[in-house]
Length: 310
Image (cartoon, rainbow, N blue to C red; front, side):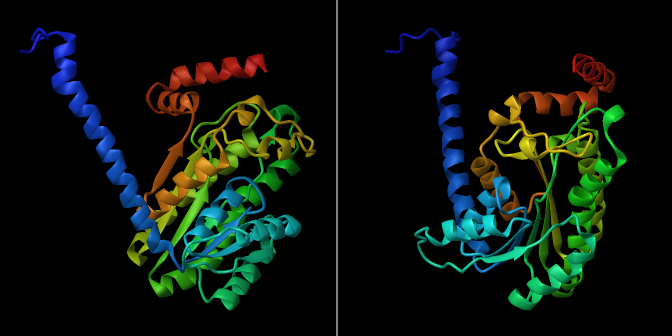
């Protein structure tokens, strides 16, 4: 005998809430199993990752290596790349694994980019996935930021990615396959006070990627843009101030951000699914994006209020 009154909250929970919850759990389990299966398609792929000596780039190197990819790790800090390589090779991988390759590269040195890609092609034959991850942030007001800081950040974050992509594309087009990934930022979607150089470079990256995606569709080349919010890395420590000096401080928002491992897992799934975009942000970042798109006047007011406080 059912003692729950029909139409009560408990009745709705019993007949609708519990089955719905079970359905959601079952969907997540099936989806996770499907993603694991689809990840096996990465085996043997040549994956180039810039900024691979720490943070998201290092975390991505681990995942791609575990999936049996030929990982090419690039960064200015070769000693740190060697450390990451040793970490990878000490992992016990079940099944297929390929020794990673370490290549020194400063993406801000634009005249080196074509030679770098040529070197990768000579070592690996081709590039399946290019992850433009190297970047540098900014902390400083527009009034007190030198033009040289804008130039350096634009070179590293935007032109460096454009240059590598341009060098890698001809062979991808020839092979009719490839995937270009840009690690942008929530600040590539919304500009914040004290971040003008960084936000400007990431805005440029977003627009370039949209144009690239449209043009490369006919050549079967995928383009994904990843827009993370706060991630617990050294990004704020290494950020440039208005004078060009390192910020040298771990911001509280960065310190409490997502782990690099979690973000890297989401990025790899985005690549496997061949999704165009991934926004992975905390509540305030998502709210800012929503307001900028739907109630821009309110967003502008809140941004100005934040600027006045700083």
